Amino acid sequence: MRELIWLGAFAFLAATAIADDKPTTAEATLIAEIEKLDGKAKILTELDESARVMATFEKGSDELMAKLAKKPGLGAIDVRDAGKITDKGWLALRDLPKLQRLLLSRGTFTANDATAIAKLKSLTTLSIGGCKSTEGAVGWLKNAKSLKVLDVMDSKIGDKTLDHLLSLADLEELNLSGTNVTDAALAKIVAHEKLKHVQLNNTKVTRAGLDKIEEGLKASGRKLKIEW
Figure (cartoon, rainbow, N blue to C red):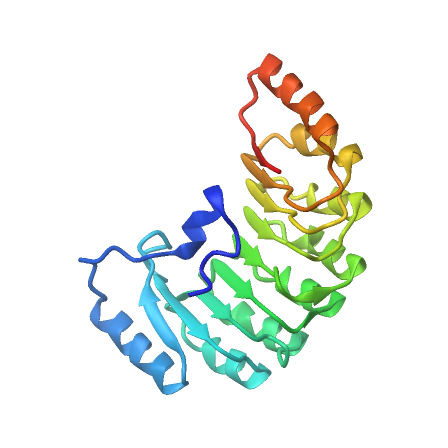
């Protein structure tokens, strides 16, 4: 299970279903359909009650995304190798009214991909950690206004692109581990009113810079968990 490329408070992405929770008849049918597509599926009780099914695939394609787009009960999609999915595939997912989570690994994340994914208006969680991406491509996620949780681990973005991501007003959790973010970005991170948890492991942020910010947080009473 890939479920945790993030640690700590990001653990909810492990998305473990409650053991005694049983799928409805419609959900059971959807799970069977996903399995016929060579995927795995389970119920995530924390998702919207009308779309609690999470589908996981080892590999993805535009054709697969088009098929999934016809299954409105899907609330989350995890693709371990998204290398063959283009913006066409992501745009197809607009037909899923309650798609809340999209977890991607491997492959290349382009500006076109970001632009397409930003059109998924119900999406609240996006992970592209593990995908190859340019700083410019990640910056286009500034248009994904519904995001609350974002993982751009190892994307090599810097402070300038982070400015774009911090324009996402509802963002609560942000994984910047493995990026080129520096001390200069810390004040902007703290200034984001809704952020609750930020991961800065293996970045250019220094202990001195972090100590200064943490002193300010303590003095103000602001609750923001920072991992470094």
